[in-house]
Image (cartoon, rainbow, N blue to C red; front, side, top):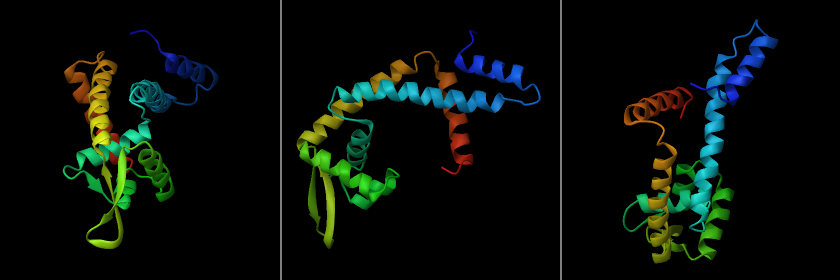
Length: 163
């Protein structure tokens, strides 16, 4: 297998500090590089639908919630691991774009529900189709068994890190 940029970095560390084992850098570095490269590709496809990764996450959370596709802002920001201020900014952008609406919560007079508009519903459905096709393209170098193994290993790592 050809060397990648991380291999070159590891070789440099082995040369300069033969007393250290840089192999953990190989894993963490590759995960970080893959995240950056994948993120750039994902953002490009989402931009074609007028979305960012952050706005897509909100729309996708509402879409996955099932009918009537409404959640409280608290459910959204805790589910997406954001601060309430970050969520408010995203919701403001999505509302200005006509993709979500804020509605009174019928079970809580002071509460608000966030729901998809018909335009938001159609946008997220088109975007998720393009997003999945893009992810399929991005993972084409891995066969089904390698994908399953990578998913298993990453799940194990994330759980060990407290996710």
